[in-house]
Image 1 (cartoon, one colour):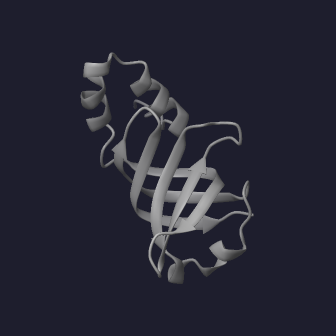
Image 2: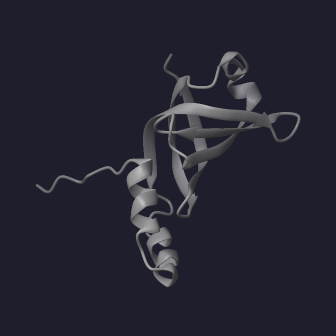
Length: 113
């Protein structure tokens, strides 16, 4: 049985950034739709509509690459009490990826701290 390695956000972003410019689009497409289940830290959160917030997350505090998603605040009212650096578990599907960020849709956010 072959073991499938689950890539972390930084590994995905580094792999795409290492590709020649015109080969990046094909590399990005290979990740679309993949299910992820990552523990990340909160870098920023802000309202995008009256009921929705945008989360910017990263694997480590000093990274400049992000994982982003929008969620309904009504489903996650505890987000209002989180501080930068708080850990959360993010589950969802990769909707878009480039050399700097991964966008997740159909996200579920679980409080870990």
